[in-house]
Every structure is written in structure tokens, then in C-alpha cells.
Amino acid sequence: EGSIEPDLMFKLAARNGIKLRYESEAALQAAYDFTNLQSFLDVYYAGLTVLLQERDFYDMTKAYLNRVHDENVVHTEVFISPQAHTRRGVAFGAMFEGIEAALKDGERRFGMTTRLIVGLQRQWSEDDAFAMIEAAKPYHNRIAGLGLGGPEVGNPPQKFTRVFAHARSIGWKTVAHAGEEGPAVYVADTIDYLKVDRVDHGVRC
Image (cartoon, rainbow, N blue to C red; front, side, top):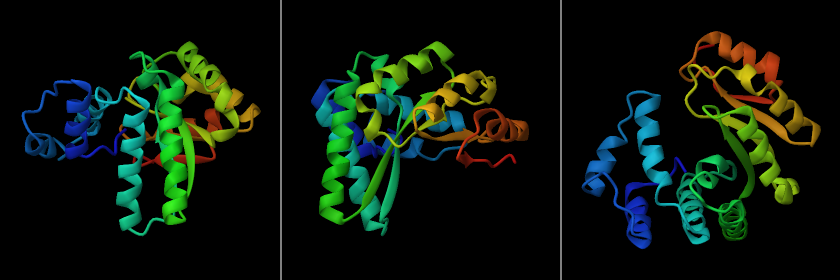
């Protein structure tokens, strides 16, 4: 979702009858000059509002693959945040099928290999996290791993210790944003408590 460019965001908004708070593509492009995590999240959340149908998720993913192919990317591991969509009434299947269809098309068109990682939003509860994994059950073997993103400060890794243990038990790889805006201890705790295979960002380490 964080990959949506202004032209596509406006196109999807028009398709779905969504009014964006940005007056123009130029105004939205100016907002992409991020100064901190929250300034990114403001645009990220605006992008969520235009994603409603399976076709929207397909178009978003296709646009991303076209762009990274032009940058000579040959393998991509794509993150999606199901909670950000299911909480808005979007069916898990519509989101997943749209993204996966575009990934498969990208593999055929470009010879690019892809993997899909479902990410938790850390501002929500452990119960919400387990509910997301339950919703993903029909697609279990088509998902490479579990990630963790969202507002970091005030949402330490320990909040999801049991969730990540469960993800490992069902065979998923694990990865988490850590030290993106939180302290260095969040990086250490992500490794110690969540037992992740990989850390995203880690800039505070």
C-alpha cells in the first residue's frame, strides 16, 4: 500500500468515488517529502482509502512491479497489511487474490520471483493479530511470512510474542520493523522476543 504513486491514487479514488484530502496530484506529490514516520503514515493512510475492490489491489501491485522491473529488480518480497483493509470492510480474499494475481503476472512478464508477506499493524491488539492469521488460513501455503509495522513508539515487540511464536509454528518466516522510530532496545527485543528471521530498518540499533 505504501508504494502507491499520486497518479494511481487519484485514478483509484475517481474509480471508487473517494474524495482525497489533497487538491491535486502535485499537492499529494509534495506530501511525499517525508520528514518522519508519521508524515509517511499520513500519505499511507490516504492511500488505503482508495483500495476497495480486487481490481484495485491488482492495479496497485502491477504498478509497483512495473516500476521495480525498470530498476532491474529480479526478486521482490511484498508486504501487505490485511488489517488495514479488513477493518474497512474489504474482504481478505479480494485483497489477497488481487495482489497475488498481479504477482503471478509479473513473474510471467518479467521472469521476476516474488513472495508475499502479511504484516501486522502494531497499534492494534494481540487478539486482532490472531484474528488476521485466522483469516489468512485459507491462503496459508501461499504466504511466505509474517511481518510487523505501524506506529512503533508505545507498541513494543513483546506485545506480539505469542503471535510470532504461532507464526513460526505454522511454518512462516518472520520479520519486523524495529528501531524505525523506537529506541535501540526495540531492535534487541524484536530479536529476543519475536525470534525474527530478519529486521526491517533497525536504524536505532
